[in-house]
Image 1: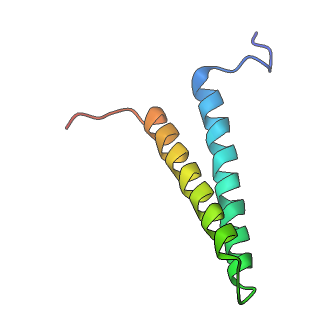
Image 2: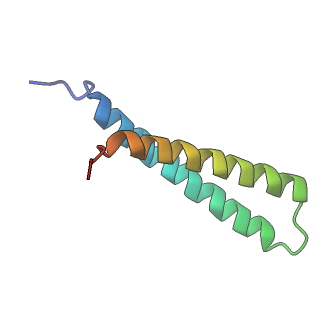
Length: 72
């Protein structure tokens, strides 16, 4: 019987994917809140968008690892 702490590689990727998606959503909400202030700090806004884009790249990379290649 496997102990709960023993996860296979795919399970770890799925957990990491959910964490990254949550962080991406949180950044999106922070960006919208900052933009709603009227005159957002452009430097902060740019940094948040850059972080969000980096998270998106990581999400896509993990999704590619989880989805098998199908040769047509």
